[in-house]
Image 1 (tube, rainbow, N blue to C red):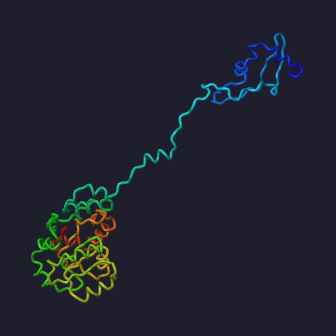
Image 2 (image 1 turned 45 degrees about the vertical axis):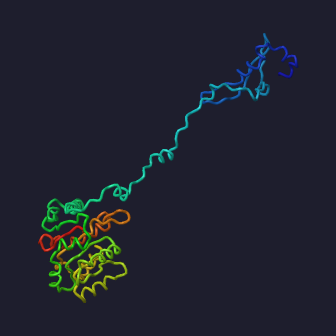
Image 3 (image 1 turned 30 degrees about the vertical axis):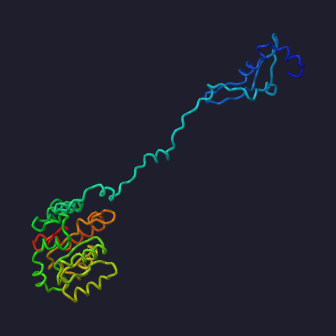
Length: 296
């Protein structure tokens, strides 16, 4: 069609129809989806005639023509879900961080009573909790953080020399010191020199010592004082290797803290074993007023 008109067709077009601005306005349009598409049909012709142009005859659009700025609306980039989770992630506080900021306070009998209530509150009735309440008379004076172990034991047990001379029962001890680890037990035994005198002291922990070997030692000789972990002492009582009835003093290594600033009763595994040991006769001995509890 357009080829039949000859070269004069372009020259005879009106100035307004053949201008680049008019061709651009007819060939480009902005869609609602913020895109730009080329026009597929253009209609035009000489004045007084109807001439159609096919898609092949569409006038080419200049490549470097500046596009309308209103067609390029940008959309704000939403933050990814992963980025938002990273910014909202809080650092979990450790118990060592909390204890590091707190001032060390000496343990009191009320602290032990509270731990007993909290431990059994979910599994015992109100009446049973009242039965587990320890009388105030069974508690000795607690350490005020000024004593060594020897000086503290001398204060709570001034008649130790006479007491140990009258003790002659095997498979038993007069005094038990509970601590959190074997290393701590060795430290406490070394610090007992000024208190122990001629008393026989036995290590009651699991490290490098089998429970059967400890049972044989308890059966073989009279032992006055035992220092160890609640887990091993509980196992000795369970296997009838240690009798708690002659026990007169049970001392908790309450105030000492490990490298993570945890006290013995701050460690869930140790705390659980302590309460299991208390159920093996300690509660009844305290209520009968034959056993005294101390917090070092």
